[in-house]
Image (cartoon, rainbow, N blue to C red; front, top):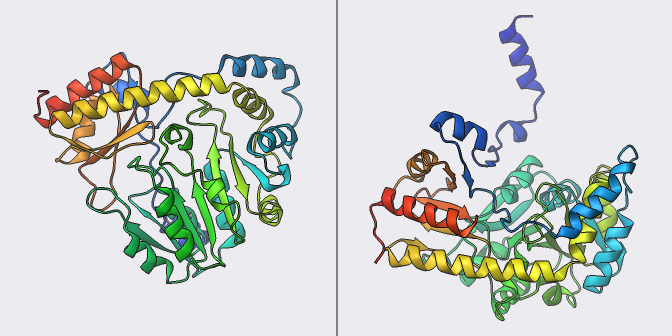
Length: 379
């Protein structure tokens, strides 16, 4: 068999749905950006990471566990699910753990979707809300935001009337950072078919909670007798992106049991479980992280708007910025200064970048360089 024949044979093995999937964009590799642009220092603003760090209790918990690294982790994550259950006042059997919350998105699609099923989600939105359903052969319908990044109730009502099997909804939204109000979330719940599984992705909820208009999805859905699951993560506000720990709170234990059947038995390692328990126990650190993030996001957004750039109103730890020019070229120019942000390539948003926080000094450098590239000046 020649190499061409081998490649053809391999291609024929791959499911049609998989071959046509878009590739997830994790952002530029810092080492490669440094090498190509000959820069000594990188400012990474592309992955919505926490620049303020994890609780000091995390390092201590991981250090204590290192002696047991030769042993498999608890496949049930009992200590963590029980800690979450106490914190959230829900039974531990209604909590599922994932290798990041996107792992749970994947498990949901594997457990629920059949080829041809309809999934409704947002646009612009988190790419895995589209990629995972399409992987299973499902159809995806996206509901666009308004011109001002707001909620379009008529568009959502129309999409939900098409009887989706699964609804992915992020609050706050990634990439815009815009949050839904309680009335808007209630509208979606009221319009969704009773049999549809509502998946509320709250990866950035901790940053939004100080706003009294932000609805806690679990509280909104708690008394609804319909299938739902709220997803959260330790990657963002808790600063554990490298540990990969997410969790979901389901409407009933039956859904968790279905997810347990399709997940790998050791999907969250023991160091990560211990780190999450320690982070959850340090709410003072979380509160200070959220406070500092809110101050910095407001400061940067004001500077960019004062210079004439359009910025979505963010309740998260990142900004969605219209550069008014090709975002890929803006990103390339920022790379020359060692600054990494993410160009948003979703149709209709190719002039937008998404930038998360670093230290105030790094953020100031980013703003100055971005305004230079965009030909803008601060007033």
